[in-house]
Image 1 (cartoon, rainbow, N blue to C red):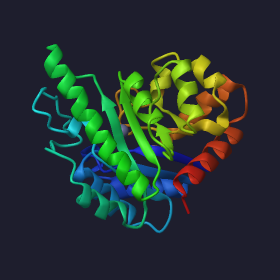
Image 2 (cartoon, rainbow, N blue to C red):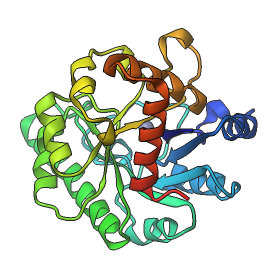
Image 3 (cartoon, helix red, strand yellow):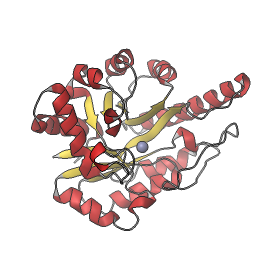
Image 4 (cartoon, rainbow, N blue to C red):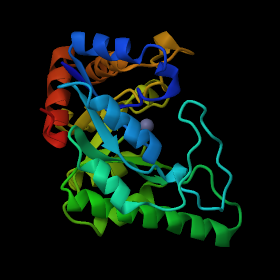
Length: 272
Ligand SMILES: [Zn+2]
């Protein structure tokens, strides 16, 4: 069995064949967690998960890029659809998080890729993202749910926030930081999520040194297809290529990677 711990099967590129893709995954013993990025997509992933008795799960949250800070212009992804939120509606998200098949809060975190140019605006922008993250960490703690972290160009700040928190379980999805940062996350008990970015950036050393017991595999589909599928839509079945590459790097067999990473996902997200 393989578990894709980060998919966006709700996005529009799956509009025509979503059910077939999901069924093919389940027939091939590939489970998935679809990850929300705002209230609209969070509702979508919950609706999808509820159609299946087992193997399709949902994570809900407000991605930092979908927070309307009024300080920076964000480029929209057509696939995801435009939907900005002025603030984090704690009660709306809490309602969603309490529904069956919701296994995590995320993807939430910090994203400093698009940022204002002037220092004052930049500081306010960073602060708004941090405030948003803290509110969502409160929700995760209140409901004892693990967190799927998104972090781009902001590991220093994310680590600082996490050091002031207790009882947070979770995964740093699409990990691309340094080995020192990886160690700090693991010291806090967090997992590292690896996807197709490992074919683009050289993370071999980090993957080699990270114990398999701390690794989750993911696709981030429809994005980041493995090189064999360049230019095509990625999907959860292709999580196998991530497992294969990790097996190669670690010089172990694919079955072991599949087994341990699936166990990790089941443990962290309490998948049944
Ligand atoms: Zn994602």
